[in-house]
Image 1 (cartoon, rainbow, N blue to C red):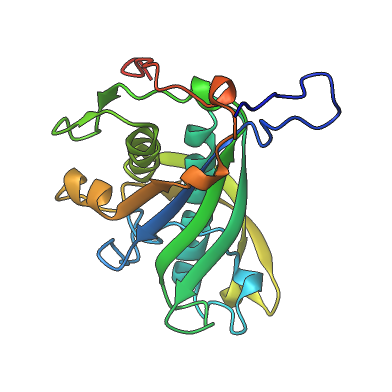
Image 2 (cartoon, rainbow, N blue to C red):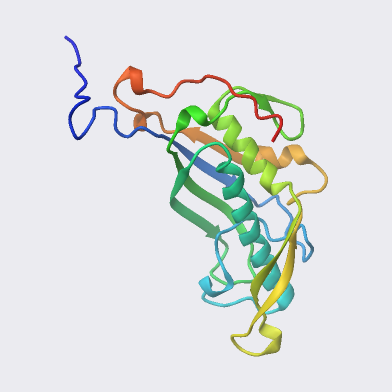
Length: 212
């Protein structure tokens, strides 16, 4: 038997052309101190919680988590456009003073061939050999970076509902062991999402990303 791909048709057997990965970031071991290293990584803002942060220091932790999420998205988009699906955030409760403990989401890369497989993890301990390991390392890179940005921060100390423009600095989520950041991140490819035809399946041609 043979499979004939309808290249001239409106819908190709090769759809979807991208590549899907699930991401799990276990953050219970990351810092939660009221410092530039606290706040972990989350897309949630102060307004998303049933009970907003009760102090400016706790609200800044929420903003740092948002900033790191933005940094993570930027790092992941260096090589290829992608979309994010199925975001699940896990907290002890829906109060803004509680830290996020786990973040799950799905990534779909538009051009999977642009996602490299060759490089070295941020701590220099392991060589990356798959796209999943590359994604894991780019997330770890974002969580181990320091950045300062002006953000709109909920400030409970200056009146109910007040929002202040504050320069927020987010530093590494761990300061003692970079390797433990990598260990908290699990990335797996969803192989059933791959195209049906072999000629459309993304390859593992390696591109070096050591210069990034």
